[in-house]
Image (tube, rainbow, N blue to C red; front, side, top):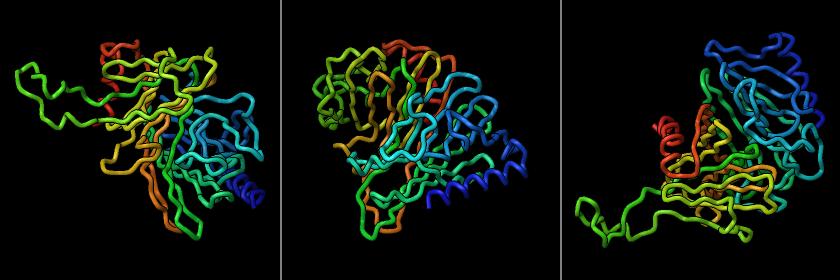
Length: 346
């Protein structure tokens, strides 16, 4: 079945190339799509406009292995020892952006996505559809749309239950960022303690006695690690190739965004928080993990009990900006990062 799927994808792409030339789609809107070889995989799809490009694999996945400005570095991490590999019996990280199942469990979350998949190409839109995973009965799909201008991407992730029973799960997306950057997460808006009058002399509403956010720690989370920076407005985690131990933290993030600043390139991930929903991992809708090689900027959807044949979707929006600078202070992030974030949160 896998070999048949591989031949189908290859022949279909060959037909499109023969009838369309090198460019599969060149929409009037400005988004172009073409088949290319990349990283050792012969059947990748490149989506590009005049500013940015994405490359998705069809020999493995569903994955977006590259996202960056045209002619510049990949903002996503690539594992040099795993690029180009296929048909692995064990799960391989590869790098890039992927779709998983939460809560994390092995082997359920670690199905080897190193087989060919189905690619459906439309003007400006690419759908990557994996065969149903044999160990858990779940089918994964990612639909990607690149805006005709600028660095805006919409990624809709879909999980479908092909079992004969209900499955409780949450969509979990992991964007693996290239090294030597820093993840930035917003805190909830500050308010003084209810018993202390504010600067206008008015007592704060009593609702502020209640907590506004959750921070979740794993057994290997060391808050003394120098890669953390906690300011009054932001939580920062730095990727350090010289570090020797992994770190992870999760949070309830009602501000609905997280960012990764590397050099002067700012990657923003926007995922709307759903009030009243039950999120996995003690209420996390954003998480981050880092080791010496990379940093993961993760978002998690609400937990659902998925009936047989039903699907759940999880929508992310990505934005890539150039010329952004910020150090590890509130004032600097407010000046350099926050205007970019506010421009996409409208």
